[in-house]
Amino acid sequence: MENDKLLEDSFGRKHDYLRISITEHCNLRCTYCMPEEGITLTPKPHLMTADEIIAIAKTFVELGVKKIRLTGGEPLVRKDAREIILALGKLAINLTITTNGILVHHFTETFKTAGIRTINISIDSLVKDKFNTITRRHYFETVQQNIDLLLREGFRVKLNIVLIKGFNDVEIIDFIALTQHKNIQVRFIEFMPFNGNQWDKSKLVSYAEVLETIQTQYKISSIERLIDSANDTAKNFKIKDFKGSFAIVSSVTNPFCSTCNRIRLTADGKLKNCLFSNTETALLETLRAGESILPLIHQNLSSKNAVRGGMDDDLKFQNPTLFSQNRSMIAIGG
Ligand code: SAM
Ligand code: SF4
Image (cartoon, rainbow, N blue to C red):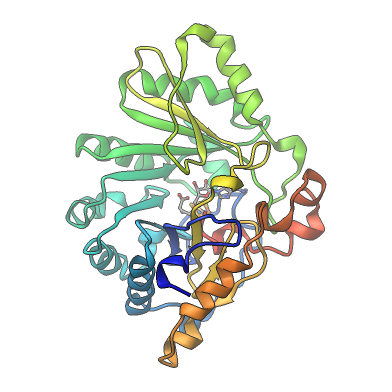
């Protein structure tokens, strides 16, 4: 097979967006991401070193990857995060990062040097007590300050909000209000089921419900639907005359699998062709043995299912027996 076809799956989808989880560790314990009891961490010798991350990333770039997002766990807690970011910044890609924002003030210069322009920050509540409850830690002010710091420093900032019914759905309008004077994008994410995250459908705030809530505050004529970029997982909107915008990521009620261009690499060097797939391809042993990982990449992509890791209807998708076979989100990298 030609190398430029290696990242194509059997449905003709080209995968040019690689998400790399660089650590399973995190300085928060978000309830929807991490089981209360924590996760069994992979022993260090089985995790990718910085050199291995860079080598695998380079292989993917040679095959056609154009965008890399660093994630985790919390990517910035990794001791050699700076070295990894700077090395990846030298590749001909759009490099981005998703972070909880706690350590961002130590990294603004690194981001600039590496050419990172857009940063996604997770913040699920604008109310201190609620933020602390959902993250099970106390970093509310730090995250707020770091969002403002990034804006001052000229970064494009996107805020990720996982909506949970009865908890933070009452803040949808407050988040939208942030976009009036600040050029940020707020992204409402439907709560997704993973191992140990106490998911159940009654906690889901759907795409339709988010829009209904927004329409209680803003006239339909002032809610503008923006043009989504190709392969966008979010549906994009803005309120007329507001500086920023908002988006809804509806993986549960409105999956976007048909245009999926994403592939994931876990911190222990396993390739996941879908967030929801529980089959993985180990790259690390082969890389360490000095052999080519190309056949493994091909095998992984050619086994990609059409829809959500094979859970092609809602009954399967919402079945705890099935979603518990997947990793917890903290060990995948969202
Ligand atoms: N620690 C970083 C952070 O929180 O931004 C990066 C890793 S985190 C796993 C990546 C994204 O996944 C975050 O925006 C988080 O809100 C989202 N996420 C985690 N669990 C989720 C779930 N069950 N449903 C939807 N999104 C989830
Ligand atoms: Fe950590 Fe991010 Fe998961 Fe929260 S969502 S526990 S910050 S990895």
